[in-house]
Length: 149
Image (cartoon, helix red, strand yellow):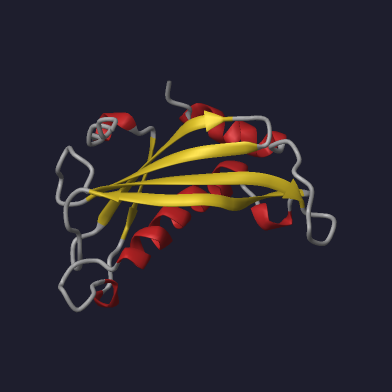
């Protein structure tokens, strides 16, 4: 059995954004529902792409579809504290991008959770099943600065 990767810190991420938590984000146990983590992860990636490309990424000839998403939980989070989302690119391939998203709360240096999010780019000009295509130049330019080695 391999050792678990170390808990990420703020230094592991390149781009940042803050999200407001809502009362409805917490479950009956008083901490953030797992579905909310995935909403935040998705929002962090796509908001960055929209801002960096200065356009509607849904209208590009090639779009990123989610091929994989996961989350490692380290410490509880919840309302009313905001969530700081750190974003980094683990791998930029020919037709895919692997993101890591750190979720932080209350000024701590260690992530309370970390998401992994994989976009695979497909042709947006044809109906499903859409063929896999290269990452568009505009997206590549938006994510290259986030690559962490």
